Picture (tube, rainbow, N blue to C red):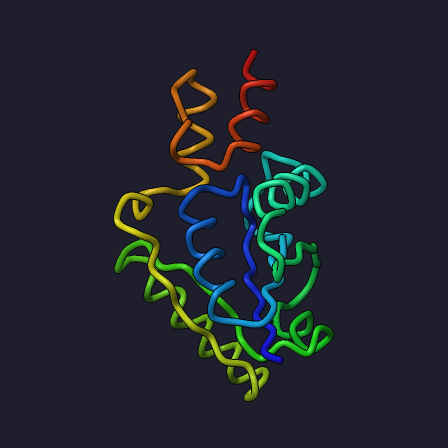
Length: 158
């Protein structure tokens, strides 16, 4: 059984993230979406709420689990007997950082591979930062986030 880890901050999960998750779920026996604490980012949405938003968004995908972790992704992958990391790439600008991370992770754990998935064109421009800015300024985020995220922002923007 091949278990893949899809790590990220998901603050919030967007349709771009969800697109990558859906495609990864077809490639691997199990995909664990892991909300990581990023020491270089201050989160807008609590970890608990992000976990719930991802669970609600992905509840119809049988081979997806949702979890959180503080620490190195490679250590989490070892704990879960995962041998693949899934990363989404939106633009060429993402590639350099993601390639460096893949190489560092490979150095830390030679058995851990990273695969890159590109979201569909209609989701390629999305980022959590853009979604938050649009939502907090009263813009329409329907069509760019899963339904649970839309409802979440409707409740906090009121």
